[in-house]
Length: 454
Image (cartoon, rainbow, N blue to C red; front, side, top):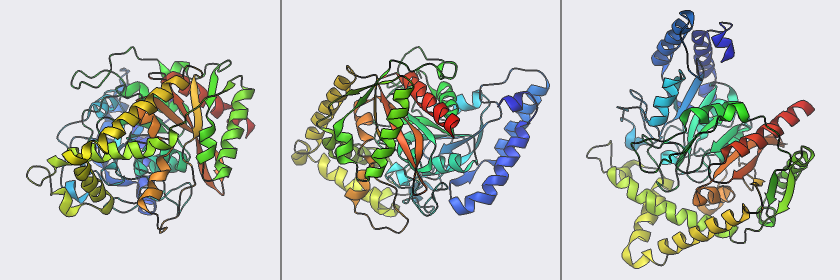
Protein backbone atom coordinates (compact mmCIF):
# COMPACT_ATOMS: atom_id res chain seq x y z
CA UNK A 1 0.00 0.00 0.00
CA UNK A 2 2.79 2.45 0.86
CA UNK A 3 4.32 1.67 -2.54
CA UNK A 4 1.07 2.78 -4.15
CA UNK A 5 0.82 5.97 -2.09
CA UNK A 6 4.46 6.84 -2.89
CA UNK A 7 3.87 6.13 -6.61
CA UNK A 8 6.47 3.37 -6.70
CA UNK A 9 3.59 1.13 -7.73
CA UNK A 10 0.32 2.44 -9.11
CA UNK A 11 -3.06 1.00 -8.18
CA UNK A 12 -3.68 0.18 -11.82
CA UNK A 13 -0.37 -1.73 -12.02
CA UNK A 14 -1.28 -3.71 -8.89
CA UNK A 15 -4.73 -4.49 -10.28
CA UNK A 16 -3.50 -5.51 -13.72
CA UNK A 17 -0.88 -7.77 -12.13
CA UNK A 18 -3.51 -9.38 -9.91
CA UNK A 19 -5.85 -9.98 -12.85
CA UNK A 20 -3.01 -11.53 -14.85
CA UNK A 21 -2.13 -13.85 -11.96
CA UNK A 22 -5.77 -14.83 -11.53
CA UNK A 23 -6.18 -15.65 -15.21
CA UNK A 24 -3.01 -17.75 -15.07
CA UNK A 25 -3.58 -19.54 -11.76
CA UNK A 26 -7.33 -19.68 -11.20
CA UNK A 27 -7.94 -22.45 -13.76
CA UNK A 28 -5.71 -24.67 -11.59
CA UNK A 29 -6.81 -23.47 -8.13
CA UNK A 30 -10.48 -22.55 -8.79
CA UNK A 31 -10.45 -19.86 -6.10
CA UNK A 32 -12.74 -17.41 -7.93
CA UNK A 33 -16.28 -17.91 -9.22
CA UNK A 34 -16.52 -14.45 -10.81
CA UNK A 35 -14.12 -11.59 -11.53
CA UNK A 36 -14.89 -7.88 -11.25
CA UNK A 37 -12.40 -6.90 -13.94
CA UNK A 38 -13.93 -3.66 -15.24
CA UNK A 39 -15.00 -2.46 -11.79
CA UNK A 40 -11.57 -3.17 -10.32
CA UNK A 41 -9.73 -1.34 -13.12
CA UNK A 42 -12.06 1.65 -12.89
CA UNK A 43 -11.54 1.85 -9.12
CA UNK A 44 -7.76 1.59 -9.52
CA UNK A 45 -7.73 4.45 -12.06
CA UNK A 46 -9.75 6.62 -9.66
CA UNK A 47 -7.34 5.90 -6.78
CA UNK A 48 -4.31 6.78 -8.92
CA UNK A 49 -6.00 10.00 -9.98
CA UNK A 50 -6.68 10.96 -6.35
CA UNK A 51 -3.06 10.33 -5.43
CA UNK A 52 -1.88 12.31 -8.45
CA UNK A 53 -4.04 15.25 -7.35
CA UNK A 54 -2.71 15.06 -3.80
CA UNK A 55 -6.09 14.04 -2.36
CA UNK A 56 -6.39 11.86 0.73
CA UNK A 57 -6.78 8.14 0.09
CA UNK A 58 -8.11 5.38 2.35
CA UNK A 59 -6.38 2.79 4.51
CA UNK A 60 -6.67 0.13 1.80
CA UNK A 61 -5.64 2.38 -1.09
CA UNK A 62 -4.98 0.19 -4.13
CA UNK A 63 -5.02 -3.12 -2.26
CA UNK A 64 -6.76 -6.05 -3.96
CA UNK A 65 -9.57 -7.57 -1.88
CA UNK A 66 -11.46 -10.80 -2.62
CA UNK A 67 -14.99 -11.38 -1.29
CA UNK A 68 -16.60 -14.69 -0.35
CA UNK A 69 -19.60 -15.47 -2.55
CA UNK A 70 -22.15 -15.26 0.27
CA UNK A 71 -21.50 -11.52 0.84
CA UNK A 72 -23.39 -9.00 -1.31
CA UNK A 73 -21.53 -6.82 -3.81
CA UNK A 74 -23.48 -4.61 -6.20
CA UNK A 75 -23.52 -5.97 -9.75
CA UNK A 76 -21.80 -9.28 -9.01
CA UNK A 77 -23.33 -12.76 -8.70
CA UNK A 78 -23.91 -13.73 -5.06
CA UNK A 79 -24.32 -17.46 -5.53
CA UNK A 80 -23.25 -19.01 -2.22
CA UNK A 81 -21.61 -21.49 -4.63
CA UNK A 82 -25.05 -23.02 -5.21
CA UNK A 83 -27.18 -23.52 -8.31
CA UNK A 84 -30.01 -22.17 -6.15
CA UNK A 85 -28.68 -18.62 -6.59
CA UNK A 86 -26.64 -18.94 -9.79
CA UNK A 87 -28.60 -16.10 -11.44
CA UNK A 88 -28.84 -13.81 -8.41
CA UNK A 89 -26.97 -10.51 -8.86
CA UNK A 90 -26.32 -8.29 -5.86
CA UNK A 91 -28.37 -5.08 -5.79
CA UNK A 92 -26.52 -3.55 -2.84
CA UNK A 93 -23.20 -3.66 -1.03
CA UNK A 94 -22.92 -5.47 2.29
CA UNK A 95 -21.87 -3.19 5.15
CA UNK A 96 -18.34 -4.62 5.12
CA UNK A 97 -18.06 -4.11 1.35
CA UNK A 98 -19.19 -0.49 1.72
CA UNK A 99 -16.43 0.02 4.29
CA UNK A 100 -13.78 -1.62 2.09
CA UNK A 101 -14.77 0.57 -0.85
CA UNK A 102 -14.83 3.70 1.32
CA UNK A 103 -11.19 3.01 2.26
CA UNK A 104 -10.23 2.58 -1.42
CA UNK A 105 -9.94 -1.20 -1.39
CA UNK A 106 -10.35 -2.76 -4.84
CA UNK A 107 -12.92 -5.58 -5.02
CA UNK A 108 -11.42 -8.05 -7.47
CA UNK A 109 -14.13 -10.72 -7.48
CA UNK A 110 -16.22 -13.36 -5.72
CA UNK A 111 -14.47 -16.41 -4.28
CA UNK A 112 -15.45 -20.04 -4.30
CA UNK A 113 -16.76 -21.71 -1.14
CA UNK A 114 -18.59 -24.74 0.20
CA UNK A 115 -22.20 -24.52 -0.94
CA UNK A 116 -24.11 -22.16 1.40
CA UNK A 117 -21.04 -22.38 3.70
CA UNK A 118 -22.15 -25.89 4.69
CA UNK A 119 -18.79 -27.64 4.63
CA UNK A 120 -15.30 -27.90 6.06
CA UNK A 121 -13.34 -28.90 2.97
CA UNK A 122 -14.02 -26.63 -0.02
CA UNK A 123 -15.29 -29.62 -2.03
CA UNK A 124 -19.05 -28.98 -2.13
CA UNK A 125 -19.27 -25.96 -4.44
CA UNK A 126 -21.51 -26.24 -7.49
CA UNK A 127 -18.56 -24.67 -9.38
CA UNK A 128 -16.23 -27.50 -8.37
CA UNK A 129 -13.69 -27.82 -5.53
CA UNK A 130 -10.94 -25.35 -4.72
CA UNK A 131 -7.44 -26.80 -4.63
CA UNK A 132 -4.99 -25.99 -1.84
CA UNK A 133 -2.15 -23.97 -3.42
CA UNK A 134 0.05 -24.66 -0.38
CA UNK A 135 -0.49 -28.44 -0.60
CA UNK A 136 -1.76 -29.28 -4.07
CA UNK A 137 -4.13 -32.23 -4.21
CA UNK A 138 -5.31 -31.68 -0.64
CA UNK A 139 -8.43 -29.86 0.47
CA UNK A 140 -7.94 -26.17 1.32
CA UNK A 141 -10.51 -26.33 4.13
CA UNK A 142 -13.86 -24.64 4.19
CA UNK A 143 -16.12 -23.05 3.92
CA UNK A 144 -14.08 -19.93 2.98
CA UNK A 145 -11.95 -22.07 0.67
CA UNK A 146 -11.59 -19.66 -2.25
CA UNK A 147 -10.72 -16.68 -0.07
CA UNK A 148 -7.97 -18.63 1.71
CA UNK A 149 -6.57 -20.12 -1.49
CA UNK A 150 -6.57 -16.73 -3.25
CA UNK A 151 -4.59 -15.14 -0.42
CA UNK A 152 -2.20 -18.10 -0.14
CA UNK A 153 -1.33 -18.16 -3.84
CA UNK A 154 -0.94 -14.37 -3.98
CA UNK A 155 -3.72 -13.48 -6.43
CA UNK A 156 -5.16 -10.93 -4.00
CA UNK A 157 -3.74 -8.91 -1.12
CA UNK A 158 -6.58 -9.48 1.35
CA UNK A 159 -9.86 -11.39 1.53
CA UNK A 160 -12.98 -11.58 3.61
CA UNK A 161 -14.70 -14.80 4.60
CA UNK A 162 -17.43 -15.84 7.00
CA UNK A 163 -16.99 -18.10 10.02
CA UNK A 164 -19.88 -20.12 11.49
CA UNK A 165 -17.82 -22.80 13.22
CA UNK A 166 -14.31 -22.45 11.79
CA UNK A 167 -14.87 -21.42 8.17
CA UNK A 168 -12.16 -18.74 8.27
CA UNK A 169 -9.76 -20.46 10.65
CA UNK A 170 -9.93 -23.97 9.17
CA UNK A 171 -8.81 -22.92 5.63
CA UNK A 172 -6.34 -20.39 7.06
CA UNK A 173 -4.65 -23.29 8.85
CA UNK A 174 -4.67 -25.64 5.85
CA UNK A 175 -3.45 -22.97 3.41
CA UNK A 176 -0.80 -21.40 5.67
CA UNK A 177 -2.22 -17.88 6.03
CA UNK A 178 -3.53 -15.64 8.83
CA UNK A 179 -7.25 -15.45 9.58
CA UNK A 180 -9.45 -14.12 12.35
CA UNK A 181 -12.98 -14.82 13.55
CA UNK A 182 -14.06 -11.65 15.37
CA UNK A 183 -16.18 -11.40 18.50
CA UNK A 184 -19.85 -11.93 17.70
CA UNK A 185 -21.29 -8.52 16.89
CA UNK A 186 -18.00 -6.68 16.27
CA UNK A 187 -18.36 -6.83 12.47
CA UNK A 188 -21.68 -6.06 10.72
CA UNK A 189 -23.40 -8.94 8.96
CA UNK A 190 -25.79 -6.82 6.89
CA UNK A 191 -25.55 -8.24 3.38
CA UNK A 192 -24.29 -11.67 4.45
CA UNK A 193 -26.32 -14.72 3.44
CA UNK A 194 -25.64 -16.51 6.68
CA UNK A 195 -25.57 -20.19 7.53
CA UNK A 196 -26.59 -19.87 11.19
CA UNK A 197 -27.51 -16.39 12.39
CA UNK A 198 -26.51 -16.86 16.04
CA UNK A 199 -23.05 -18.12 15.09
CA UNK A 200 -21.89 -16.38 11.90
CA UNK A 201 -19.29 -13.62 11.72
CA UNK A 202 -17.51 -12.00 8.78
CA UNK A 203 -13.75 -11.74 9.24
CA UNK A 204 -10.41 -10.93 7.57
CA UNK A 205 -7.82 -13.17 5.89
CA UNK A 206 -4.30 -12.14 4.86
CA UNK A 207 -0.77 -13.39 4.30
CA UNK A 208 0.49 -11.71 7.48
CA UNK A 209 -0.83 -10.42 10.80
CA UNK A 210 -0.58 -6.75 9.83
CA UNK A 211 -2.82 -7.26 6.79
CA UNK A 212 -5.36 -9.15 8.87
CA UNK A 213 -5.39 -6.41 11.52
CA UNK A 214 -5.68 -3.69 8.88
CA UNK A 215 -8.71 -5.28 7.25
CA UNK A 216 -10.44 -5.83 10.59
CA UNK A 217 -9.81 -2.18 11.43
CA UNK A 218 -11.74 -1.26 8.28
CA UNK A 219 -14.72 -3.65 8.51
CA UNK A 220 -15.37 -3.63 12.29
CA UNK A 221 -17.75 -1.29 14.08
CA UNK A 222 -21.37 -0.60 14.90
CA UNK A 223 -24.01 -0.67 12.17
CA UNK A 224 -27.35 0.98 13.05
CA UNK A 225 -29.11 -1.23 10.49
CA UNK A 226 -28.76 -4.39 12.56
CA UNK A 227 -29.47 -5.30 16.14
CA UNK A 228 -26.53 -7.69 16.68
CA UNK A 229 -23.65 -5.26 16.14
CA UNK A 230 -22.00 -3.86 19.25
CA UNK A 231 -21.47 -0.22 20.16
CA UNK A 232 -17.83 -0.33 21.24
CA UNK A 233 -14.75 1.84 21.02
CA UNK A 234 -12.67 0.31 18.26
CA UNK A 235 -8.98 -0.40 18.84
CA UNK A 236 -6.30 0.94 16.50
CA UNK A 237 -5.14 -2.59 15.75
CA UNK A 238 -2.34 -1.83 13.29
CA UNK A 239 -0.58 0.68 15.54
CA UNK A 240 -0.59 -1.64 18.57
CA UNK A 241 -0.01 -5.02 16.93
CA UNK A 242 3.73 -5.12 17.67
CA UNK A 243 3.40 -4.61 21.44
CA UNK A 244 5.26 -6.72 24.01
CA UNK A 245 3.66 -10.01 25.16
CA UNK A 246 5.69 -10.38 28.36
CA UNK A 247 3.51 -11.54 31.23
CA UNK A 248 0.55 -12.56 29.09
CA UNK A 249 -0.98 -15.82 30.33
CA UNK A 250 -1.50 -18.56 27.76
CA UNK A 251 -4.07 -21.19 28.72
CA UNK A 252 -3.54 -24.80 27.70
CA UNK A 253 -6.22 -27.45 28.26
CA UNK A 254 -5.27 -31.15 28.42
CA UNK A 255 -8.36 -31.96 26.37
CA UNK A 256 -6.76 -30.41 23.28
CA UNK A 257 -3.95 -32.96 23.23
CA UNK A 258 -6.28 -35.84 24.13
CA UNK A 259 -8.48 -35.41 21.07
CA UNK A 260 -5.84 -34.38 18.49
CA UNK A 261 -5.89 -37.17 15.91
CA UNK A 262 -2.46 -36.44 14.40
CA UNK A 263 0.06 -36.14 17.23
CA UNK A 264 2.57 -34.43 14.92
CA UNK A 265 0.19 -31.47 14.86
CA UNK A 266 0.31 -31.16 18.62
CA UNK A 267 4.10 -31.32 18.55
CA UNK A 268 4.06 -28.23 16.31
CA UNK A 269 1.76 -26.48 18.78
CA UNK A 270 4.05 -27.36 21.69
CA UNK A 271 7.00 -25.92 19.79
CA UNK A 272 5.03 -22.71 19.16
CA UNK A 273 4.22 -22.49 22.86
CA UNK A 274 7.92 -22.75 23.73
CA UNK A 275 8.67 -19.85 21.36
CA UNK A 276 5.96 -17.75 23.03
CA UNK A 277 7.39 -18.62 26.45
CA UNK A 278 10.80 -17.45 25.26
CA UNK A 279 9.13 -14.15 24.32
CA UNK A 280 7.90 -13.73 27.88
CA UNK A 281 4.46 -15.32 27.89
CA UNK A 282 3.42 -17.53 30.82
CA UNK A 283 1.70 -20.89 30.43
CA UNK A 284 -1.18 -21.86 32.73
CA UNK A 285 -3.32 -24.99 32.80
CA UNK A 286 -7.07 -24.66 32.25
CA UNK A 287 -9.82 -27.26 32.09
CA UNK A 288 -12.45 -27.68 29.38
CA UNK A 289 -14.19 -30.93 30.39
CA UNK A 290 -17.05 -30.61 27.88
CA UNK A 291 -14.93 -29.88 24.80
CA UNK A 292 -16.16 -33.04 23.01
CA UNK A 293 -19.80 -32.01 23.53
CA UNK A 294 -19.28 -28.76 21.64
CA UNK A 295 -19.34 -30.43 18.22
CA UNK A 296 -22.74 -32.20 18.46
CA UNK A 297 -24.30 -29.15 20.14
CA UNK A 298 -22.97 -26.90 17.39
CA UNK A 299 -24.30 -29.04 14.55
CA UNK A 300 -27.76 -29.46 16.07
CA UNK A 301 -28.05 -25.67 16.39
CA UNK A 302 -26.58 -25.26 12.91
CA UNK A 303 -29.15 -27.62 11.34
CA UNK A 304 -32.12 -25.80 12.89
CA UNK A 305 -30.94 -22.27 12.07
CA UNK A 306 -29.91 -23.24 8.54
CA UNK A 307 -33.26 -24.93 7.88
CA UNK A 308 -35.04 -21.78 9.04
CA UNK A 309 -32.81 -19.51 6.91
CA UNK A 310 -33.36 -21.55 3.74
CA UNK A 311 -37.17 -21.23 3.81
CA UNK A 312 -36.79 -18.03 1.76
CA UNK A 313 -35.26 -20.04 -1.11
CA UNK A 314 -38.56 -21.46 -2.35
CA UNK A 315 -38.08 -20.45 -6.00
CA UNK A 316 -40.65 -17.64 -5.89
CA UNK A 317 -38.32 -14.69 -5.40
CA UNK A 318 -34.70 -15.87 -5.17
CA UNK A 319 -33.56 -18.25 -7.89
CA UNK A 320 -34.57 -21.89 -7.68
CA UNK A 321 -36.14 -23.97 -4.92
CA UNK A 322 -33.16 -25.01 -2.83
CA UNK A 323 -34.21 -28.64 -2.25
CA UNK A 324 -34.50 -29.18 -6.02
CA UNK A 325 -30.93 -28.18 -6.93
CA UNK A 326 -28.71 -28.23 -3.83
CA UNK A 327 -25.90 -30.66 -3.06
CA UNK A 328 -25.90 -33.59 -0.66
CA UNK A 329 -24.53 -31.81 2.42
CA UNK A 330 -26.90 -28.85 2.11
CA UNK A 331 -29.87 -31.19 1.72
CA UNK A 332 -28.71 -33.22 4.72
CA UNK A 333 -28.70 -30.12 6.92
CA UNK A 334 -32.10 -28.99 5.66
CA UNK A 335 -33.70 -32.39 6.33
CA UNK A 336 -32.12 -32.76 9.76
CA UNK A 337 -33.06 -29.20 10.65
CA UNK A 338 -36.63 -29.84 9.61
CA UNK A 339 -36.74 -33.02 11.70
CA UNK A 340 -35.23 -31.45 14.81
CA UNK A 341 -37.50 -28.41 14.54
CA UNK A 342 -40.62 -30.52 14.93
CA UNK A 343 -42.40 -30.05 18.24
CA UNK A 344 -42.00 -33.66 19.38
CA UNK A 345 -38.20 -33.61 18.82
CA UNK A 346 -37.32 -30.02 19.73
CA UNK A 347 -36.87 -30.75 23.43
CA UNK A 348 -34.94 -33.95 22.83
CA UNK A 349 -32.36 -32.39 20.52
CA UNK A 350 -32.45 -28.61 19.99
CA UNK A 351 -33.18 -27.52 23.56
CA UNK A 352 -30.47 -29.83 24.90
CA UNK A 353 -28.04 -28.37 22.37
CA UNK A 354 -28.88 -24.84 23.57
CA UNK A 355 -28.26 -25.90 27.19
CA UNK A 356 -24.94 -27.50 26.19
CA UNK A 357 -24.00 -24.27 24.40
CA UNK A 358 -24.49 -22.43 27.71
CA UNK A 359 -22.23 -24.93 29.47
CA UNK A 360 -19.52 -24.57 26.81
CA UNK A 361 -19.69 -20.78 27.03
CA UNK A 362 -19.53 -20.84 30.83
CA UNK A 363 -16.51 -23.18 30.86
CA UNK A 364 -14.70 -21.07 28.25
CA UNK A 365 -15.27 -17.80 30.11
CA UNK A 366 -14.20 -19.47 33.36
CA UNK A 367 -10.93 -20.49 31.67
CA UNK A 368 -10.36 -16.82 30.81
CA UNK A 369 -10.35 -16.00 34.52
CA UNK A 370 -7.02 -17.87 34.62
CA UNK A 371 -5.61 -17.01 31.19
CA UNK A 372 -5.52 -14.09 28.75
CA UNK A 373 -5.84 -16.40 25.73
CA UNK A 374 -6.40 -20.10 25.04
CA UNK A 375 -4.07 -21.86 22.62
CA UNK A 376 -4.76 -25.02 20.65
CA UNK A 377 -4.36 -26.62 17.25
CA UNK A 378 -6.82 -25.22 14.70
CA UNK A 379 -7.79 -28.63 13.38
CA UNK A 380 -7.13 -32.07 14.92
CA UNK A 381 -5.90 -33.73 11.71
CA UNK A 382 -4.20 -32.98 8.40
CA UNK A 383 -6.38 -32.14 5.39
CA UNK A 384 -7.32 -35.15 3.32
CA UNK A 385 -6.57 -35.64 -0.36
CA UNK A 386 -9.23 -35.07 -2.98
CA UNK A 387 -11.17 -38.25 -3.65
CA UNK A 388 -10.92 -39.56 -0.09
CA UNK A 389 -14.24 -40.91 1.17
CA UNK A 390 -15.15 -39.42 4.54
CA UNK A 391 -18.38 -39.94 6.44
CA UNK A 392 -20.25 -36.76 7.45
CA UNK A 393 -19.11 -37.27 11.05
CA UNK A 394 -15.47 -37.60 9.95
CA UNK A 395 -15.85 -34.37 7.98
CA UNK A 396 -17.43 -32.59 10.93
CA UNK A 397 -14.42 -33.63 13.01
CA UNK A 398 -12.33 -30.89 11.37
CA UNK A 399 -14.34 -28.36 13.41
CA UNK A 400 -13.68 -29.83 16.85
CA UNK A 401 -11.37 -27.04 18.08
CA UNK A 402 -13.06 -24.16 16.28
CA UNK A 403 -16.77 -24.48 17.14
CA UNK A 404 -16.39 -23.55 20.86
CA UNK A 405 -15.35 -20.04 19.78
CA UNK A 406 -18.61 -19.53 17.90
CA UNK A 407 -20.75 -21.14 20.60
CA UNK A 408 -19.16 -18.77 23.13
CA UNK A 409 -19.32 -15.65 20.94
CA UNK A 410 -15.61 -14.89 21.51
CA UNK A 411 -12.79 -14.14 19.05
CA UNK A 412 -10.04 -16.39 17.67
CA UNK A 413 -7.17 -16.03 15.24
CA UNK A 414 -4.95 -18.44 13.34
CA UNK A 415 -1.27 -17.98 12.46
CA UNK A 416 0.94 -20.49 10.56
CA UNK A 417 3.33 -22.54 12.72
CA UNK A 418 5.10 -24.74 10.19
CA UNK A 419 4.37 -27.73 7.99
CA UNK A 420 4.00 -31.50 8.28
CA UNK A 421 4.86 -33.42 5.11
CA UNK A 422 4.64 -30.12 3.23
CA UNK A 423 1.16 -29.28 4.56
CA UNK A 424 0.71 -26.05 6.60
CA UNK A 425 -0.38 -26.14 10.24
CA UNK A 426 -2.06 -23.25 12.06
CA UNK A 427 -1.99 -22.25 15.72
CA UNK A 428 -5.39 -21.15 17.03
CA UNK A 429 -5.46 -18.36 19.66
CA UNK A 430 -8.82 -17.76 21.32
CA UNK A 431 -9.36 -14.44 23.09
CA UNK A 432 -11.84 -12.92 25.48
CA UNK A 433 -14.84 -11.08 24.01
CA UNK A 434 -13.65 -7.93 22.20
CA UNK A 435 -9.99 -8.71 22.90
CA UNK A 436 -8.86 -9.10 19.30
CA UNK A 437 -5.92 -6.83 20.06
CA UNK A 438 -4.31 -9.39 22.38
CA UNK A 439 -4.70 -12.06 19.72
CA UNK A 440 -3.01 -9.82 17.17
CA UNK A 441 -0.16 -9.05 19.60
CA UNK A 442 0.56 -12.75 20.17
CA UNK A 443 0.25 -13.69 16.51
CA UNK A 444 2.53 -10.85 15.45
CA UNK A 445 5.10 -11.65 18.14
CA UNK A 446 5.19 -15.26 16.98
CA UNK A 447 5.28 -14.27 13.31
CA UNK A 448 8.15 -11.83 13.86
CA UNK A 449 10.13 -14.28 15.98
CA UNK A 450 9.89 -17.12 13.48
CA UNK A 451 10.64 -14.77 10.59
CA UNK A 452 13.88 -13.73 12.29
CA UNK A 453 14.80 -17.38 12.89
CA UNK A 454 14.26 -18.39 9.27
